Image 1 (cartoon, rainbow, N blue to C red):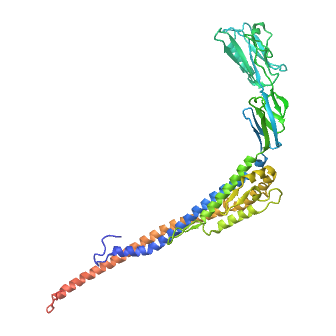
Image 2 (image 1 turned 135 degrees about the horizontal axis):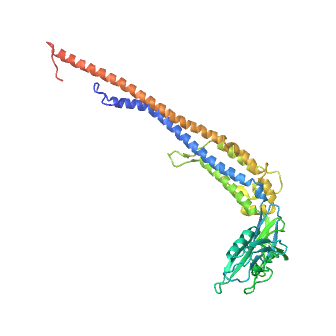
Image 3 (image 1 turned 60 degrees about the vertical axis):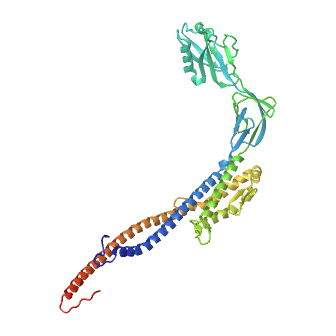
Amino acid sequence: MAGITGIGSGIDINSIVGAMVNAEKAPKEAQLARLEKASTTKFSALGELKGALSAFQTAMKDLNSLTLFEKRTASSTNTSALTASATKTALAGSYQMTVERLASSSKVATAALAGDFTASADGNLTVKLGAADGGVAVDIASGDTLVSIRDKLNAALKDKGITANIVNNPADGKSRLVLNAKETGTGKDISIETADPALASLALDGSSQSVGDAAGYLQQAADAEFTIDGLALKSPSNTVDGAIPDVTFTLVGKTEVDKPLTLKVGQDTSGVTANIKKFVEAYNKLITTSNQLTSVVQVGEGKPPLTGGLVGDATVRTLLGGVRNELVNPADQEGVRVLADLGITTQKDGTLKIDDAKLSKALTDNFDAVGSFFTGDNGLMSRVDKRVDGFIRTGGVLEQRMKGLQTTLTGIDKQRETLSRRVEQMQARLFAQFNAMDALVGRLNDTSARLTQALGGLPGVVKQDS
């Protein structure tokens, strides 16, 4: 509507209409801007509080775990010789151990044969793993080479854990079949038997050592040998289960002479300590975040203070008040009743501080009491979680408030659209009115000019110079 206006009247219609429109629009725009800023700030603040509260709830869930307090550790002072693990029923204890010998599996070789060896007649080989084993019969056909014999052995013995390969001697061109067993332990030696003269050169006794080109064992199957507190023990496997009830350990190397290792079995205090510290850190983050969101900071004389997005917010006071009440509420048990018994105390700013030495002593002296203090339906973590769940859960207090603020922000956008339309309509109306006035004044001025001219031409009319 704006253009060349005010020609008839000489009035600056554009400026007048602009001023009137701005007078109507500016207060409402300022009001919407203030509401948008306040709503956005509060929405962001609630989101930040919700994030800190969610992390706090996760830390509580991790600490409120019976499994955490049921874990047992089994630590070795020499992991290059022995590693161990323990189940939750393992009893605490310390054991002096030595590893004298690792369990070994059988490795055998046939007698040295010509590189171009072939079976001269049909027959079969029976491969056994120990004297008590019934064995596996492997059919060999006339003309089979060492390669084909090897492949037939591997196909037949794969379920028995025995593999075969060929080793060639570059010096004399002779070859030998070498068989390896997976199973360890004394008496688990590989042997090859045959009643067929054509295959006699492939037979071997796994209990006799190979010397020179003769058949026999390269490594004999043997039990592991170790001691626990001076008691000499053996195991057919390097993984030993049951020597110490509910403890499994693996022998991985021999210990040095007169240098035993120590195996310690006990509660998983390090895991519990880590989760307690995680809980304290999450709580401190919640307090720090809440303090920032509800603080008022003076920045200088004559300047407005910096205020947090939730200053004076009742939600924050209610939330933190409930959490703090539970943290100081003593448990109905002996040994550990309050956080202070664990060396966890409140500082001036509301955050928690851990006395590591006192926490370590409490875990050593009252491990079960620490577990019952934190876990279970009446444990501290469950009680605190009940206080915060109504705020953090889906459809809870924080989510409902954030949805309300989102609705407000959406409403502000709609109000701006409505204001824009109303201002456009007002501007069009004002221009129409002022332009109509301008046209009328222009016509009146034209009429006045014509009358003045006409009257000036009448007899007796004296013109006055201006």
